[in-house]
Image: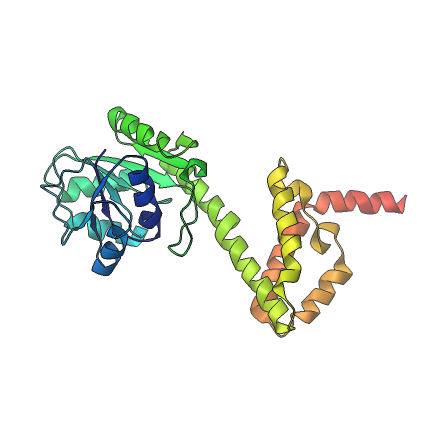
Length: 277
């Protein structure tokens, strides 16, 4: 399948290469930042930089809209696509219905729509990713388009699912907790160790074991540890005292500790009653 990319950010940087490696030549790349188009094209076999958003004469069958969510309408408003082209976005949150409505508003020709969402964290700084292990979530406006997108996805990944817009939003929320928030907390841990001139590497065996246990368990909650999990109020108080001059981190520590305590409150109460007897 011949493909054009609209947008040249982190997702496009990896997805375009993966699609081309799977035998789907990328024909054109257009980005609102021309330098990003040039950088992506330099990684591809025979793609060219598109100077504008008029794809009316494009040889491509599929157009991948890979731009930030808040830019989707602005970009779709500029697009001129061939009749019966397939336009997909790669967003975790924007619904298929939103894309369909935008196409109906702005396109003068019939365009099929879909979603081609890779559930992974992407950055240009990382090396080439193995798409065989990346879940691809597919949604389409009609059965024929769905079938084409599923076939395309199966050429890239071993993990392909039909996922509704609501389900995809839930996955995206879960991904923010699992990835973005987790990484933010690791950054805080790095700042705390740096504040005492301690080497962050001291925590890495703990971090690796934490993720190993969480991924091996039926539910990560089963392997939760720590003072909040135990109901160890003395240790919690000592930690809060240590963080007294770091109010933002202290507030976050309290919020997370309260959440953990609430989840395990009944079990802690049973343990206390058992000790009493």
